[in-house]
Length: 260
Image 1 (cartoon, rainbow, N blue to C red):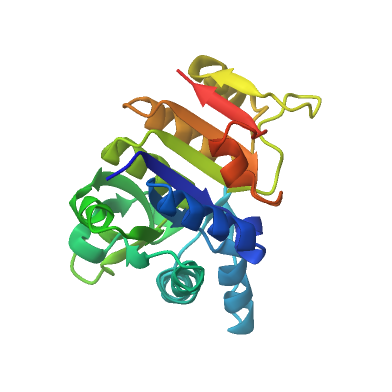
Image 2 (cartoon, helix red, strand yellow):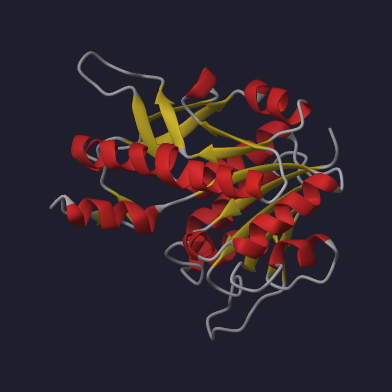
């Protein structure tokens, strides 16, 4: 296994991710061990609308009732996951799709009753990922987890925030870097100016003050989780830029870098 990196593909990059997947294949061929974690919220919302199922969010988190959970699993562990795996393989890489349920490698519990089957991660067993990496694969992770506290009558699968999953995985496997490819330039101050470098304390302060808000909150929290272990740096970059990932690895990236 080469140097470890965890890459989180966000919604914007899922719609236009050709160069990102090319970059992942390039890194694999250069000897990097790459783990990909993806979202799929936009497609989930579209599928729910087609089925006449209302989409509800509480504090930015998707309320996941039973009908919504079925769509979440179908989209994340099915369509989105397999499209990414197929594209990486077609580009000459070697990828294999896996969800957090497989091998019970991500275990969660229901976060709050009013959020339904939305989970929070309580344990990551890195053995399945390490086995895939050792065999030369890029694991492509769909962010659903095993319901570790399943009660009679409950579903055994939970919907989990993909940003949080990426942070937990990076910490569990001892990645060198965690990179978020998103649809913004990075973390900005109150006036909208990019903050190129942050310490963990500065990042925490931005969340506490409400400067980092919305979808940036789980990203920053995932970075803090990853940096609590051996991860050296977390980077939040604009995945819409051509070869953003490769440029970052080669030291030509932009965005925001968070370090201890």
